[in-house]
Amino acid sequence: MTTSAAPAVPTHSPTTPGPTTAGGAAKQRPETAVLLVLGSCTSFQFGAALATHLFPVAGAVGATLLRLGLAAIVLLAVTRPKMRGWTKPQWRSVILYGVSLAGMNGFYYASLARLPLSAAVTIQFLGPLTLSAALSRRWRDGGWIVLALLGVLTLGLADRHGSGGAGLDPVGVVFALVSAAFWALYIVAGSKASEAVPGRSGVAVAMTAGALVLLPFGALGAWHVAGRPGPMLLALGVALLASVVPYTLEFAAMRRAPRRVFGILLSLDPALATLAGWLLLGQHSSPVAVAAVAVVITASVGSTLLASR
Image 1 (cartoon, rainbow, N blue to C red):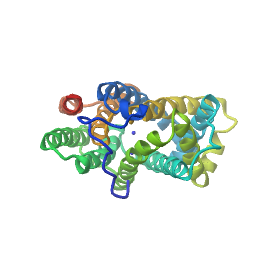
Image 2 (tube, one colour):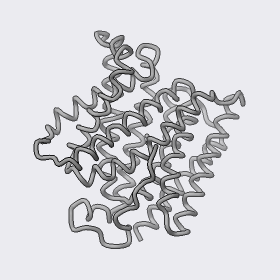
Image 3 (cartoon, rainbow, N blue to C red):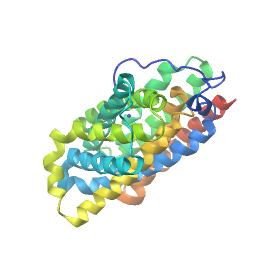
Image 4 (tube, rainbow, N blue to C red):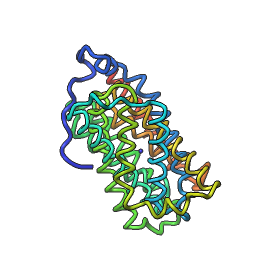
């Protein structure tokens, strides 16, 4: 699950006709975007939970490099992107998308090394939530944003008290906030890249660019995993669950929902992070946290139903 210069205003709203392109037509189907984002967030958070088992061997940045690098290899092999005819604006949009992927994931995994999964995602979610608030022009949108924000903040407080009230690691919080900024950039850059480059080629090339950005910082950690069958198999699973599947689904979702709605849809991420942390890492949640999850989901669904009308 993320930043950055001021985001651009959406090219059209969900209540007015968009361009006649396939991408423009797809923007009129936010209901489909719900399913795509739900599948993306579920896959991403379960992949993130598995990735924590790589940290002792590769470190946070090394694990991120392995994940993006292996995912790029898989996507390049599957999509075989034809880049020869790309224009400079297309290259710029895809490379910016790749930089946002590197920053969002690198700092997110660094925060995961210091914070519980649900707390890291809760803080990180401030990025897309702030972006949604900046892009909203109707008071009804603002109501759903406030509801999602209340749910996310309650989830973070419940997580803190549920862990004994010891407080959150301040460095981990800073890493999560930087990741939040890159997450907002990811939404803006990914939306532009999805319009500029057809199919999954943009994801494959952006993933490659992101891996290259992280190479100087994570090469040593990734080298410690190379040649070890168990960790390498785990890294491949993380690459599939946390990169190939979610970013392919989100790239498609960005064609079907305006950025402000897409940002609110990502409020499902903290809820699914809580579930993944409980099932895979034994990080239990209190009843208050469960109630907060329900509030977040309600805000996400409500905003999408409003947009579809």
